[in-house]
Length: 196
Image (tube, rainbow, N blue to C red; front, side, top):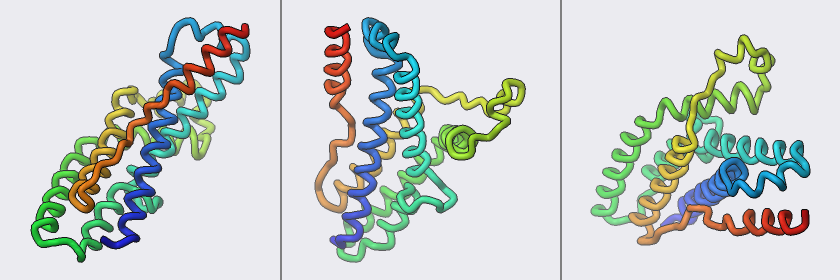
């Protein structure tokens, strides 16, 4: 199989892993053990900034993955189009399977349109442009981004599904794209608690 195609899928895997890592760290900081609140009180400004940084990073990665306007080389639509146009070295059976997969994934992608628009709005209005109106409480209502943690996880899960299903058809392999090393964060917090 073409090395360029393999590299594109690998770059996408790395993007998903990084996004999942930021997402999970944010989750641990917001919804972790109650005993950690004592650590947060030591330096609330620092932890607030860290939490916001994790959140901004996973929003930026999701925006890059799901960007539809073509501003990102790593967006999902470009990846699917690239795979479809660069599958010359696979068998006809695999091509049919791949075309069916791409059609299926495009249909599933359309179900996330509202959530994707919320991610893009947050990225555009809050992170990328720091729209002054966002900081005016009266005008801020126009920028309300009602997106749940489950919605965020669903977008990362779907991106992971795309990579895994492509890898399975093209290379008979599967990637582990879930960030599982929450132990680092837990160890850090435990260390801080012991040394209060």
